[in-house]
Image (cartoon, rainbow, N blue to C red; front, side, top):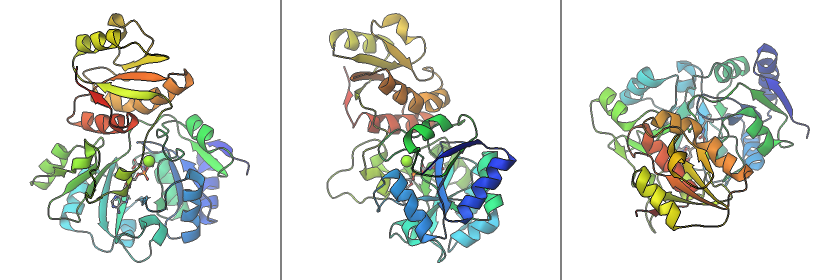
Length: 339
Ligand code: TXA
Ligand code: MG
């Protein structure tokens, strides 16, 4: 299949909507990461996403909507708490898990009776949803297991030949995937951290918001899998990544004491002054939003440079930093050292 890369202008949006209505998969920009979109009502179309991505069938997809009417079509019920979160954070990088409406294709929910819903803020994503008139199921637009793409060129590299169209809407602002919050249990629970933090949601809801244990550690044998995405290998570059906790000097001492073949550091801007190996930056030490913005492109850059071993500075594990840590931890296959 020939893959077309078009700017996300009126013509690109029109073409995307046409293909989506015909049951095809289209690569679209969102404010978090690029997505592989298909008609969420259409079983066949959604299956094409799984094929294009090489995604395990039991990992459900997020449905992207453009207005409240679509919310009531996709969800079977919309509790007060969901409306409060939607008012506060939509359109934006928050996915809310709700009871699944009957029209949603089975493949979207992978057998669960819930569905993840989000209203993206990227104007091109909104335009494509509106122009197609469809809610769009869309996972991140990477081949399964690779870091999520934050620009159209990366989607092209991963997906060329596997779908008819990718829309180029520039670089993603946020850089890590949406926060996933479940309202299915007794207490709201974050299943995947993102740009919208548990603290912010707790303030809006006026109640505690829990964070699932598997956000900051490996799933344990027999533990309930609340979000199937937690089970799988993720964001993995080719190099073996190890997170090194501690401040800049501790990090520099660890790096000096542990030489390795093809060694690179994944560090914060400015750290290179104390390091004697090649470095790739992700943001600055004080700015977790900048770390989130840069992380996936930095992981891909390390692959391009042929890194074999990577020592990574550890982000703060709170606020947006929790999302950064969660992704980096998976990229590192849970290897963390505390010198
Ligand atoms: O920012 C994002 O959310 C991006 C863009 C494209 O919108 N999408 C994205 O989709 O990250 P994906 O498929 O890569 O990640 C969806 C995550 C997975 O970890 C999945 O297990 C979880 O959300 N998820 C989806 N539906 C769920 C459900 N009903 N219950 C629990 N977890 C769910
Ligand atoms: Mg993904």
